[in-house]
Structures are given as C-alpha cells and as structure tokens.
Image (tube, rainbow, N blue to C red; front, side, top):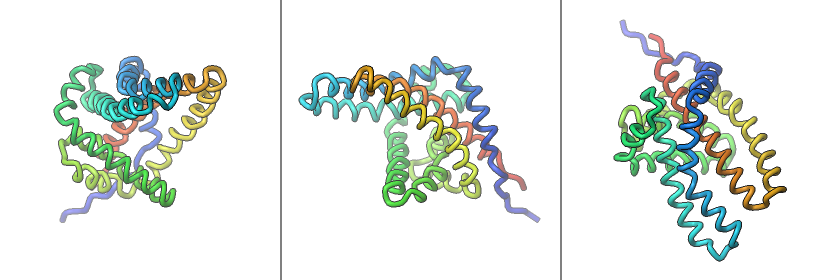
Length: 226
C-alpha cells in the first residue's frame, strides 16, 4: 500500500550553515559577479548623485539594464552552486540562452511578493517563503515560468514557518548592518557614498542570498519521507 509522502521539517539552521561555508569558499568570485551585475544601477545612481536630475533619463535606462544584469548575475551564481562549480563563465553560458524566461520568473516572484507587502505584510512574507524555490527550480529542472512558481509552492508547503525563520535570521542582521553602513557612507560622501555602499553591500548580500536560496531548495527537495 502506497503512503503519501509528507514534508520533513526543513532544516533551516543547516541551510544557513551550509550556505555560509559555500560563500566563504567562493566569496571573491561570486561577489565580483554581483558587482558586475549591479554596475549599471550603480552608474545610474552615481550620475544622479553627481549631476542631479538632469541625467535622470539616462539613469533610468541604466536601471532597466541593471535589472537584466542583476538577474543574469543571480542566475549565474545559483547555477554555479547547483552544479557545484566555481566556473562562473560556464554557469553564465548555461543561463544566457534562457535569460528572458528567467527574467520573467524573477519579475513575477518580485511582483507577487511586492503586492503582498503593500497590501498587508503577512501575505508578502508568506509569498516570499512559498516562492523561494521558484528560480532554482527553473534553473535546475528547466520548468516553465508559471510551473516554476506552482512547483515552488508545492515544494515549500508545510515548511513556510521554518523558511521564515531562516529568512529572518539572515535578513534582520543584514538590514541592521546595511542601515548603519549606508548612514556612515552618507555622512562622509553624501549621495555618492550611498550609491557606493549600496553597490558593494548589495553584491555581498546578493551573493550569499543566491547561495542560500539554492541550498534551501536542495534541502527542500530531499526533505520527504514515505
């Protein structure tokens, strides 16, 4: 007689620990990937900081380019972690042919979480937990855009609270440190300091977050028992 598989408790402590170990081994390479991915947005912010709103159109165009390069950077690092390699060139070559649908998945996830946060905080948090595996699923299983979101909801079901704990343990210290560093750079360099600190900190945080998402996905996939 078949027994329906039930979700085992998601080991968020192990996910955080394993992600940190991977980050420590690959921090320089993965951070550089995110620095490159964030460069267009940084340049746009820098133009506004130096020249004011007169270059706002160019800054906005750079921000749009920055969305694409940021998604490519995140997809590259996540693919590298999924395949167990530090060869980001090979990872990027794998991601590039599917960049447009990857942007679609990323935007949909962001929009759903954003709407949830705007309407009421709790739905946004639930969406962030339920959709955490959408992009790794897309990269690993070659699922479609909508299918990636649906399968992420199915994969995370029953573990949303534990995923929330993981995100909170990661996110709360990050927000505090980010705010402090931004304030210091703002006092020293003004808008230029804010742009610079946001770029560098965003790259470091983004690299670790990309690793964490993949590690969480792997543990969720293996976390069933018959």
